[in-house]
Length: 442
Ligand SMILES: Nc1ncnc2c1ncn2[C@@H]1O[C@H](COP(=O)(O)OP(=O)(O)OP(=O)(O)O)[C@@H](O)[C@H]1O
Ligand SMILES: [Mg+2]
Image 1 (cartoon, rainbow, N blue to C red):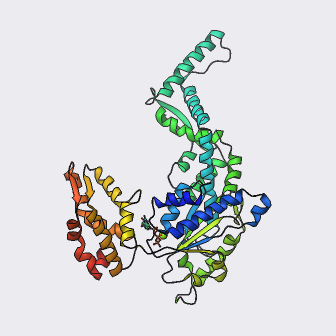
Image 2: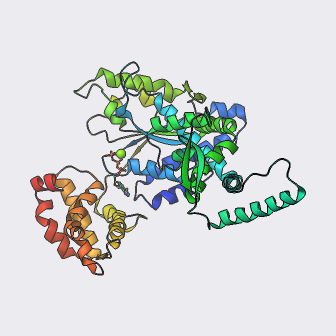
Image 3: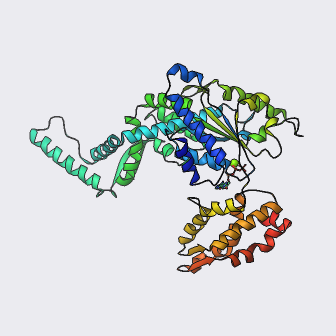
């Protein structure tokens, strides 16, 4: 969390080309969070975060910046689409649910941290449970000799379980119907309703709903981890820490904010959009939201709103809402050079992704430098002839060029295929130059 603004920007530079203003503003906002936390409590209360509004047309990196930040930081973070919410009282998600989502995210994050801390205890608890299934229990009235022999066989069994020698052997274990493993290991738990369900079970009725299962010891080691960590984790402190973390460090990325703007300049005035904005006001301003885990004050949650604002303008938002996003950053349209940089100078560029995919078929894919320049050039051409969809155009353009190679790659295993400028032009020139074809094909 205590990365300097420079370090944050440097990290983002690995993935996002240009957009320096946006990177700087966000980095600063995060650093100010950190600075605030170092102050005495009284002063902390006074300092409100300055929410950010990112403005930029489609495909220039708004969401990507947020996505990357989320990965990097150990802060609870959710990305939500403003257009998904409906006014309180209508069918659909009400805006307060974003705060609840943030708390679930925070619980998952803190649980994971706590689990890492007691990793060793969890491991030995798992092994203990398995070994106890394998060694016949010691009767209460055992002789000294029997006790010693029990300890010997216990230790021997423990060694075997640890070494994996018995991994294929089957045993019967008891597991709750859902375990916390599912939540934490599911990658990005965006489906919060199911996470909610699992968490409820995890935090409330531990061990109420158990099922017996016959599994190999190898699987038991995994399954029992969930059970063991539930048993060993201090859920009360996790809850408190998670609430605090969401409250003081939480970030909500409010995407597509332009879609709920409905002002004078906009023909399709829509009272329900305005209703959503009104519902948003108290949350962004600072209010208290009830969640399953307790109350959360939203005063210090950082909101980053983003939108293309093609049809509407920031001034079409309710004035009160505009005022709550004092920091404005504009993201620049991407020119040919930027697109070239995106292909060549980012950590997980599209080209690398295609190379990795075809490597699976045994094909080595290479791109000549002027082929990459041609991708960038033709993408810019297509963007200017049809809609400007920013870096997303690269996806369609490259896909079109590689379509055939990709289609029969499995038959060309062992080959090295170079994508040259000629190939790119052969596939694309006629398409990109003409408005109609560019619009439908790319
Ligand atoms: N500046 C950039 N540097 C690197 N990659 C970028 C950049 N801008 C966009 N991309 C790539 O283009 C794709 C779309 O970008 P992103 O999702 O950030 O668009 P957006 O600005 O959020 O657009 P929208 O307004 O349509 O949501 C992503 O795959 C991203 O990797
Ligand atoms: Mg986006």
